[in-house]
Image 1 (cartoon, rainbow, N blue to C red):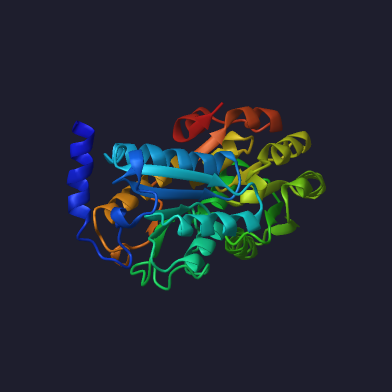
Image 2: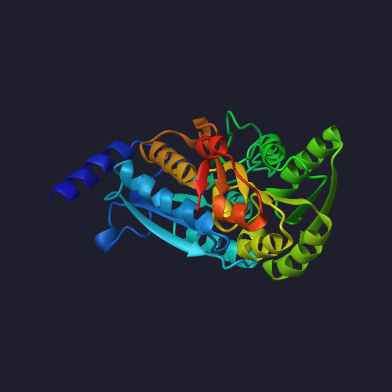
Length: 330
C-alpha cells in the first residue's frame, strides 16, 4: 500500500506539467497492468564497454538514491556497436511513448534529438553538445534536449603526462575519426603539443577490429600514447594497453575506466559521478521542471588516477609523494 501511495502522490504532482517537454505518465502507452502510473525511461547505449556500462549503472543507482525507484520503469537497450541499431531503438522508444529518453554518447543523443521534439531527451557523456548540434546554448537549451557533458581537460592530462614521464619527445594519438567526442579532444591535444614544441603522430580507426594493428604501429613510433573518451577505442582498450606495455610506453586516457583497463594515467572523467548527475537531472524533469530551463551540466568532479600495475610493467617508478597525491589503481 505504501508503494501505491507514493506513486499516486507523485502522479498528482506531475499531472500539471507542460505537454511539450514534460512527463505525462497517463499518456504513455506502456501504462497498463503493473506498469500503470509509472514514469517510463528508455536508456540507449551504443555499445557495451566498461565506461558506458558504468554510466548506465550509476544512472540507475542515482535514480534510486533520488527516491524514484518505485516511480520509474526503465527499459535499457544496447545497439551492439551498430549505428543503424541506434536509430531503430530510438524509433522504438518514441513509438512506445517513453516519458524520458536517456541516450548515452553523442551518436545516440543525436539520433534521439532528431527523432522527437516532444519527449524530454537527457543525454549522458556528450563531450561537445554545441558542436554536436544538440543545443545552441549550454546555459539555456531551447528545445527538449539537455544533459551532462563529459568533456575532458586535455591540458591537465598532458601536464600530468609530462610530470610523470618528462622524457616523452613524441606523442601518438589514436582515435576513431568518426566519433564526435574524439575529434575536438584530439585537436586540443595537437594545440597543446604545437604550443610546447612536442612532436606528435596520429592513427585513426573506424572499428575496434582495427585497433590491434594501429596500436602496434603507433607503439613503434611514439614515446607515449593519448586516447580521449573514444567509444571505439574503449570497447577494446585492453588491446591497446597490452601493445603499449610490450613497448614500454604509457597510455594517457580521458577516463578512469580506460586506466582501469590497462591505461597508465588520466585527469579524467569519473563516470559514477556523471551517472548520478544525469539521474538528478531526470528527477527535475519528472518533478515538472521544463527541460528547456535546465542548463547542460559539465562533470562536477574529475579524478587524477594512475594504474600502478601498468606503471610497473612499463618501468615508471612512482615516488611516495605521487602515491599519496594521486588515486592509485592496482
